[in-house]
Image (tube, rainbow, N blue to C red; front, side):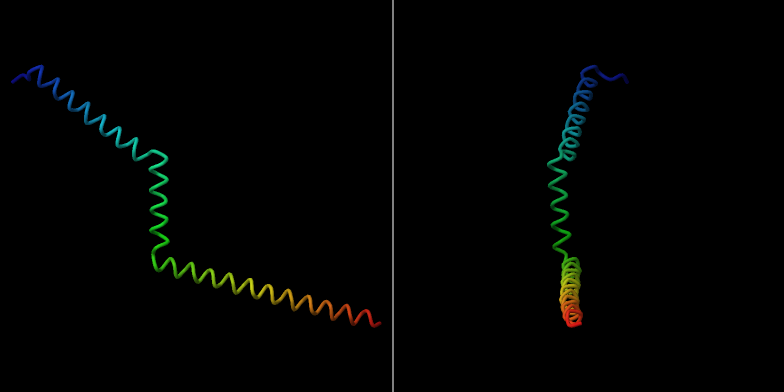
Length: 91
């Protein structure tokens, strides 16, 4: 049975509206603001994870210890150089 021209036009109009809606949704999902907001939300969620927080805290402590060792070694070396200068100045 052949379709009525009005049915065909309604199908075309419905398909056109669905396509327009799909394109609008794609444009919204790929907009820079939406992408930025999604990335922020993902990063915030990542850093809220207790395991990640423990790892970051461990890294922070490790860096602080390394900096402390470096400072202490620098002071020790400076003290040794002063002592060496003092001994050489006596000669």
